[in-house]
Amino acid sequence: MPEELPPQPKTIRLRADGGVLYATLDAPPLNLIGPEFVRDLVRLIDYLSGPTPFSVVVFDSADPDFFIPHVDLTKIAEYTAEAAKAGGPGDASLGMLFQRLSRLPVITVGKLRGHARGGGSEFLLACDIRFASQEKAILGQPEVGMGAPPGAGAVQRLTRLLGPGRALEVIVGADDFTADVAERYGWINRAVPDSELDTFVERFARRVAGFPADAIAAVKPAVHLISAPSDEEIRAAAVVFQDLVRHGSVGSRAAWLLEQGLQTRGTTELQLGEIVADITPHQT
Image (cartoon, rainbow, N blue to C red; front, side, top):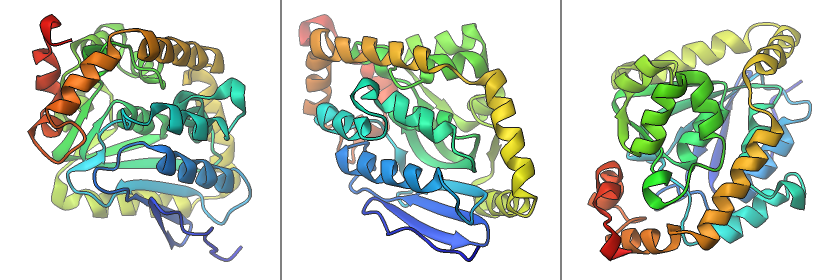
């Protein structure tokens, strides 16, 4: 099958290299998860769910500082409505969209530079394999610091990968983690020196893409059958998250963070793991 790309999305730049599809996230100013990004991801997942010439998809970012910092806190209803188009109103959640991502017949690789927190970390957790820049990657799940547990698969996937103690450290601590610690915990496959990351990932992707596609297609679902969370777990997490966003303290805490410069290129976004601990009751 000749290489043939789908129409170029607005927020994800696609490039083919043999059996590898490179999908570069490019949604300025920060690569936040918003309605347009979710719309493009739904279409890309639809495309990759059918017969394609690709065995491997590599997700990376056009922004050296931000992979996906988190969801757009001002557009939760809008991006949730777009996510619903992937599976219907009963599955109107980012978590269920990431379930579809995790079940694609291709091998998905996350190549991380910059910050990936909240929904950005959950996006990476839905990928099959994660490689990160040793010097430039930061991971975090700040949701508890903002008033809700993660709602798109982090609880379920981190507990399976890290074990309960480390998963709780990550989730209730709501702090930032370097690539070296994330590798040691099992959050990512490997922390690679930044100067070597591109070559390392390219070699791995080409190697896998050179193997028989039917063998890859047989292995991936067998691994997921053992290790992946169920749809029921993901749906339940989304219900709790969405309820606390609507009725809990998330709104006031998010408003305070937005006043401090969250969702702009500044200290608040870069140091969110520290700053969520500075929100005090009198400020919410």
